[in-house]
Amino acid sequence: MLHCNEVTRLCASEDIRRASFGKRMAVRLHLMMCSSCQRYVRELKVIGDAVRGISREAPDDEARADALIRRVLSDTAQSDE
Image 1: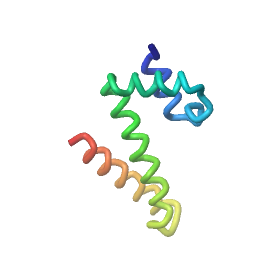
Image 2: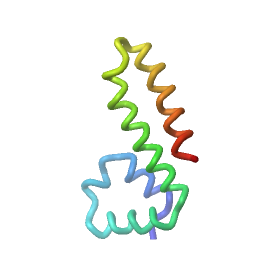
Image 3: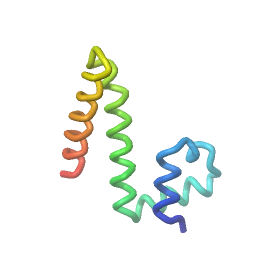
Image 4: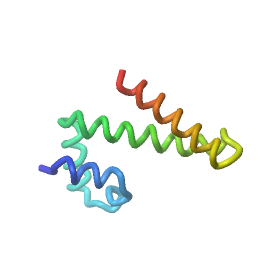
């Protein structure tokens, strides 16, 4: 059985795509049972979606950073409900 630190490292990096079938299944099994890791993966998705979407919404770096912070915080709060 995988530990949370290994699951979160794999999910946050590209390593999960190169992992063996057995390792990917072990990650899925862990995620089915661990609500903390489920929440972490959801938050990773929210952040990734926000980063991809924010570049189209803000004209410069400072405005983009502010918009990203607002979007991540609002999306994370909604996913916790």
